Length: 175
Image 1: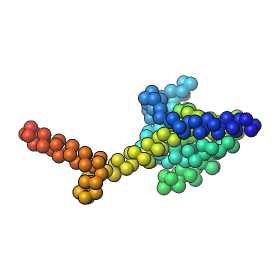
Image 2: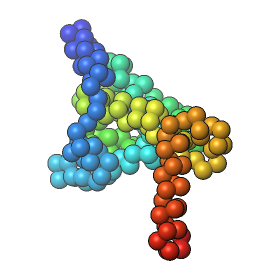
Image 3: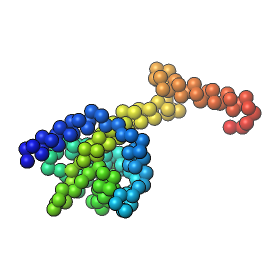
């Protein structure tokens, strides 16, 4: 049992080092697919429910005993900031199992993250929190000019918008 726990811990540590998926794996996760002849609904990246679910899963990456519906649901609900029922989580657990994120421990209602599930959940959670959310804030038209001038992405976006508006005006097409 100790060897199995050590092996899983080493897998988790290794998976956090190189977690970026290839294009096919990412497409399999975010688009509907088939697994063993069964439909595997999409885990739509950017959907608040999916982002909260993946972030909650990352919390269980080092838990050898796994997790259950009852232990995962309050975390997802807290991260989502909205009611999240046990039925919704049951559906999400089925999606995660068919997408290869989790596996059910034999003879129990307990799940554990797979090594691929750990990598993908960590990558997608980090991508959303560290890249997507801050970048969207820089693209906000309500961002003050002073703040936009100090942020490279905001400056580039405003330059692009200005150049596009000028190109449209020169073409004589009403925007």
